[in-house]
Amino acid sequence: MNGRFLAISILGLLTCFSAKAQKGAAKDTVIKGATIEIIQSYTPEVKRSPRPTPTPSLPPVDTTTPVLQHHVPAQTLFYSYGSLPLRPLALTLSEEETGYENYVKLGGGNQSTLYLDAGVGSLKGNNYETAILFNHLSQSGSIDDQKVSLTGADARGVYRNNGKAFGAQLGIHHNRFHYYGYDHSKYTYPLNAVRQAFTDLSLAVDMKDELSDGKKFSYHPNISAGLFTDKFNASETSFGISVPTTYIIDSNTQVYANVHLNITGFNNSVGSQSNNIFQIAPGIRFSKGIFTGHAGISPTIGSTATYFLPDVAVNFTLPGTQFMFFAEWEGRLMQNSYKQLTTLNPYMSNLYRVQQTQSTEIYGGIKSNLGKHVSFDGKLSWWQYNGLPIFINDTAGDKKQFLLLYDTRVNAIGLQAGIRYHIAETFSVGFSGQWMNFVKKSYAEVWHRPGVTFKGDVLAMPMKKLTINAYISFIDELYALDNGNRTLKLSSILDIGAGAEYEIIKRLNVFVQANNLLNSKYQRWYGYDAFGMNIFAGARLKF
Image 1 (cartoon, helix red, strand yellow):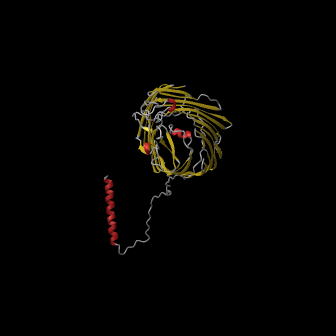
Image 2 (cartoon, one colour):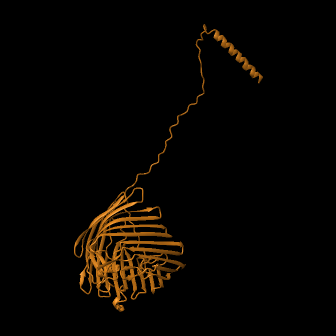
Image 3 (cartoon, helix red, strand yellow):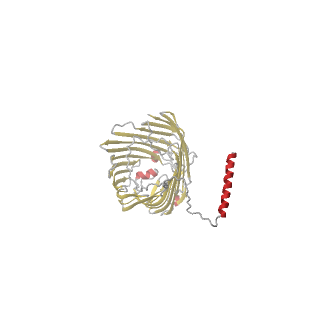
């Protein structure tokens, strides 16, 4: 350590001495040929190239709408074991339940209710399948002659050969109603005088090419015939042919045409009347990106006039959303057959004049989904009816039957909306409503045509073997004509019902159904009180 310090000190003294000597000789001493050599350690490197920064991008959007054709084989049975609809006098067909091809459902309750629903679907082979349905519902209320009985059987089958499916349907129905809407303090009638019975026989056959997938041309012809009679010597025969065809031009365009013929003859105690319709309905369907729609016009020959009925529609899907906006201009010709009218009002008189109704509807609306569980739709319409059928009581007599009138021209503004929330098959709740404002009419009111209707339903499966259902219905703005041409507004209709079904064992279920829980005596048809609260229960056996 001391040696190092001594060396550094001597070096410092020599440096100072040399500096002083150079300073003293700076004026006359010049350093010649001095060379300074700098040595530095250097390592060559290659310059790094800049790293590319990737920029992700989506592929181009394919706006071509594909034409998808699906072939769904015909099912054996279509059973539905849910609750009955709003009207306790109405029946619904059943839908198929996996694992069982046959069933029978039997129940009974107050108001002498007898309920039977059965189906057979086990009659099938390698190239054919059939389904037979039978149903019956009868009730008797607290008012004299307040009785109803609905009985029906339907059979349908399909035979397949060389890619063609030949279908046939046969229906036999016998429904009995009683005219109990008279003043029971003034009139008394024997049972035969107030009992009305409708018998309906129908037959239909059709043929479909089940190998039409991928083909440009497809068709589905069908033929139907029927006989409809009542107890008071009125009868109606019908024969119809319909041949719809479609030709695919490309993935975005199709042309279609339907030739339709319906020949109907009505006979009553006064005479006979014809009620025929012949229609050719050509058109074109198109799709282009977010737009889809169709356009056509249908020359139609009715019983008394010829019409050119429009059918133009367009749909627009908002890009990036599930919102669809739609608009349509549609014309129709309603036949107003005796079968159609008595299905609407079974208490009408068969002494009516046949007249067809031309209707035009122009509407626009929106429909969409909100998330995975909510769907909704709504539309605003403008209606025009030429010859709209309306009903009034026979005020010249005892008012128990309804006469049919035709309003020559009715204009209306309609608003419809609906929303539904569902979770798979475990829970569903929905509401729908319609409001009609008849802004122009020939008579004081559009009698017995409701202006406000509202419906709601709930279906829940809180556990695997238990199904619970409920409904609510509201009808308002109903008007009737009383004696002296006095217009009456009928009371609002509120009907609430509920039901449940539980599986005791794999093949046996028990059920209970309650209708009109408020026991309301509302009148859908003036003079005809509702049956009141109705509760019935029973069991269903599957085999």
